Length: 215
Image 1 (cartoon, helix red, strand yellow):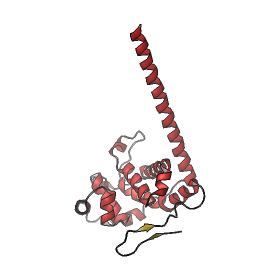
Image 2 (spheres, one colour; image 1 turned 90 degrees about the vertical axis):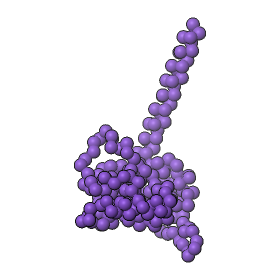
Image 3 (cartoon, one colour; image 1 turned 135 degrees about the horizontal axis):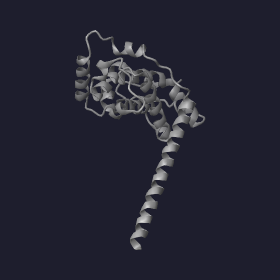
Image 4 (tube, helix red, strand yellow; image 1 turned 30 degrees about the vertical axis):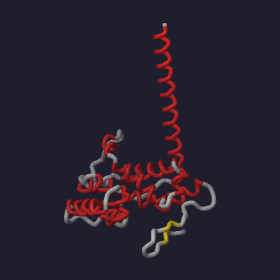
């Protein structure tokens, strides 16, 4: 496997192992198999210990990137792009209203943190992302990211295990990459069909209204 290379004073240059010779499906599978388990552990913390939703967040993050695969494959840092999609889904407030229910959180102290602080502390302390990169990925300045990080740490109970230890103990089972990819393709097809039906119904209603006005 190829890795990221770096030199003092220079930007880290990614070696594109995620875009190897072969099909896009193979490249997607390589990216998924390398990062899905770790992202599932991080999402577990972001969701306050909800393993089911953490797994869903990771799958939706990868599916979104598959929908945009040419751009993702050409990106300077595809793993960070997937991570951003997973974090965005896991931290979205609308998931509190999801129809399949919400179990009692295993980590209520984490879930009580505002989303921007929760994302910052998990990204920095659990994923091991440096402060500058954490600030960039959370769309904040470095001072703001540091303030969020310190506030999040201060808000967590003194006896709470370190986040890396909690993440290491979290469930990390993932589905096969082809199953995740195909589920995303089916979801995209359903959304496209629904949009086309809605557009057709709207056009029919507008046509009927115009014809009625003319008569």
